[in-house]
Image 1: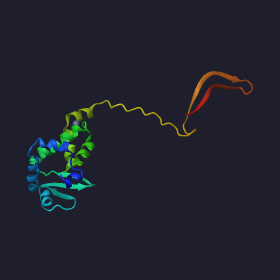
Image 2 (image 1 turned 135 degrees about the vertical axis):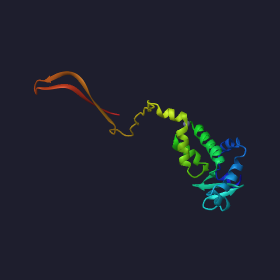
Image 3 (image 1 turned 60 degrees about the vertical axis):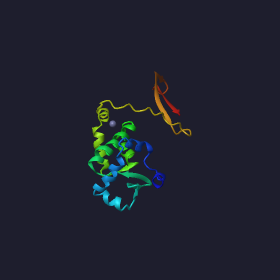
Image 4 (image 1 turned 90 degrees about the vertical axis):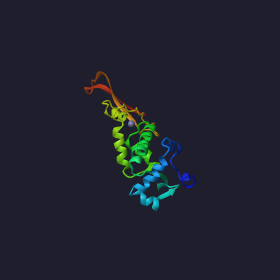
Amino acid sequence: MGLAQSQGLPTNEILQLLHAYTNWKNMLKSGYQKDPDFVKKINWPINGYSKVHEILYYTFNEQVRICVPNTPDCNSIIKNTLLDKIHTSLGHAGFTKTLHGLMNNFCWPKMTRDTREYYKTCAACQQAKNSTQKPYGLLHPLPIPSKPLTHLTMDFLALPAIIDHATKIHYSHVWTIVCR
Ligand SMILES: [Zn+2]
């Protein structure tokens, strides 16, 4: 609470997901000590890192993120749960959107790689991607012109040919020009 909360901490919803694994905080806390990169930062938080109740946070662009260490527990339970829940709650979002959803609240090294790996294993997404029929695009009506003579359409209208006997010229079409 307090400091971290006011800086836009992970939403309650995401934390509730983690609460399903009641020991997630302990997993993080003991994980920091085993992660050669995070162990220095938890003991000496500088350059955007901060420590609140023994949890390590990294602040960048005013966004506060929970650091998730690289341990078998954290990888298989916390990271996978986050990837899965964020990806599916965003409606099976694409790789980039899933990554950004994750980056809003969490950080760990190689998050991009992990997200790509996870995305490749999502059966629903891969099936949708392999469909041969591309989704139909939306129809976009033309914008309404703001002043006259900026949007002209033209066409030729075929008519029975007539001959101007004076000039011997055949006239068979009317050129129509319309100002939208
Ligand atoms: Zn998916």
